[in-house]
Length: 202
Image (cartoon, rainbow, N blue to C red; front, side):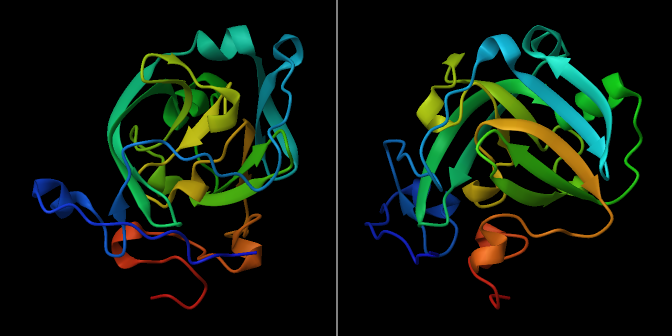
């Protein structure tokens, strides 16, 4: 079920200026998931790029991690109202994935797929130009399974449910397809600075 989330105290210093409306500063890293953490067999791990139902390229873990790398230093914002500042991630940009596959974006919309069946929609414009990566490292180490390792989508300027854990593919869709939480009442886009938490929020 969708939830309005946790509550906390806003800081009184300059960090408050970096908090979107309704958010509080979190110094830890809460673990929130739609279901149990899946076991991902690295020997058979693959990442698939699709256009509609058609797979256009698939990578093994070794092939994927050999693609050009991008580092991101950003704040992240959870719809349950916590914000964590100055997080460091490293991974493969969506543009690097498309370039390796020889694909020009055929539609404006992407649907992220995860090993546990989770999905979430993200407009291509929100991952273009290194705005979004498939992260394989957090804070200089492999991402732990409870935080979405071995790989998770990272779209830090949107609420964190858009940064799908345990990602195993991206799919271009003909329309803006709602994913798991979007079908259960969360906003179709999810801009923290506009407080787009739930369907009907502006």
